Image (tube, rainbow, N blue to C red; front, side, top):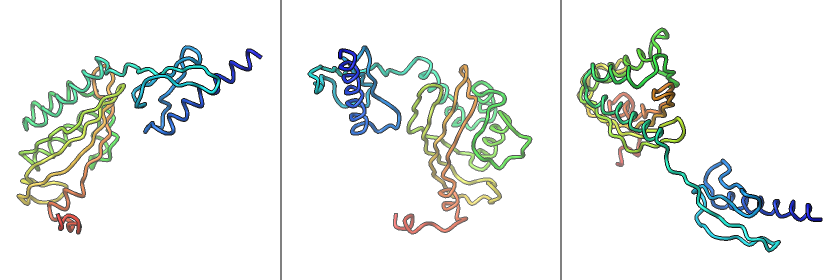
Length: 221
């Protein structure tokens, strides 16, 4: 009987945790776990409250906050990400090249489709991309809006501005100013970026350069 009662108590704790996850947690991951037997539920930051839950059995279950402070390494990775953006904003080819050599693995995997020759990979591909961008937009500027880090990954959301003064993707210079958004993810290994993913609002660039018609919404704005 004692074992059955304990099993029932554990089941009720799990149900409470599941109910809280379903009602209050925005993540698909499990954010509530029972620790130290059925007497405690750990709140990792996704729950709105701390306190005590009384189960149907009469047992009390405490909810406590779990330390979610960023680690020293995630903070260093965020600083490295910012250092890369600072280099890009220098508009100096040598500074940008040096930063790529310092911050990226030689064979960094670029998991974003790019119009590059297949033999150009790793750091060399990145250098070619940034050389092409700065040739097209000599005053290119990247403004970081958000930098978020978790584990070995850093996510950066930024706003890019520049003036189209050189050939870009087959489009001759138009002299037009462009503004567009980007989101990039960098995976770090031993202090260097080993893989990247990126989403760039290319459609916004094409509209502003007059390559495709502006959307009705853009016209209203």
